[in-house]
Length: 200
Figure 1 (cartoon, rainbow, N blue to C red):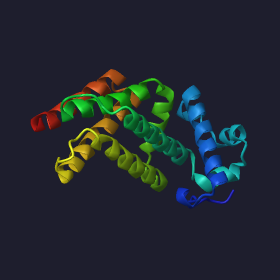
Figure 2: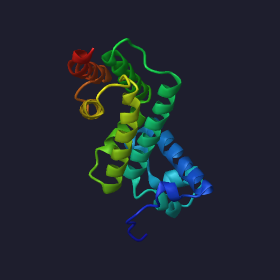
Figure 3: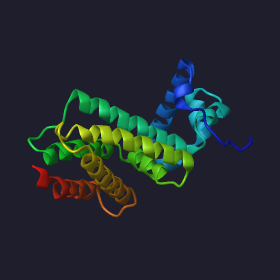
Figure 4: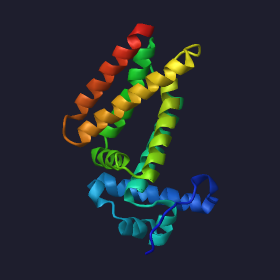
C-alpha cells in the first residue's frame, strides 16, 4: 500500500461514509476493550467492520489516529451525559470534581480500552494532535458547566486548561502503572480544590 498522508475531513463525509467511519471506531473500541492496545490491528478492524482495509485508511492514517478518534467520541458521549444530568454541588469546585470524577469512573469501568486510547493520544503524530485538540475543546465545554455564568471567561479557560493537563497526566500515570485509578482520582480532586476553592 502506498503511504497515506492525509485522511478525509470528517465534516466532508457523506452520510454513508460517516456511518462506515463510526462502525470502524466502534469495532476498534470493542477490540481494545477486549484485548487492549495491541489487540487493535487494522486488518482485524476492517474484517469485523466489514469494510476494505483501504477504506479505513481514507478515514484514519493508522491505529493511533483511529484510537485517538475513539477517545474523541467517548468524550462527546460524556458531554451528552453531562447535559442530561448536570454536575452536582453547591460550589464550582464541587461541580468540577463531579464532572472529572464521572470521566475517571467511566474510564475505570473499561480499563483496557481506556489504556489503549490514552496510549494512542500520547503519540507524537499530527493526526493524533488534531484529536488531542478536539478532546480539549469538548472537555472545555463540559467543564464550563461547572462555572457560574458571570465567571471571568479568560480565567475559566486557563483553569480548564490546567485541570485538563492534570487529568491527562493522571491517566497517563495510571496507564503506565505509576499508580492506580484511585490515585488518578485523588490527584484530580486535589488539583480541583487547590485551584477552585478560592473562588467560592
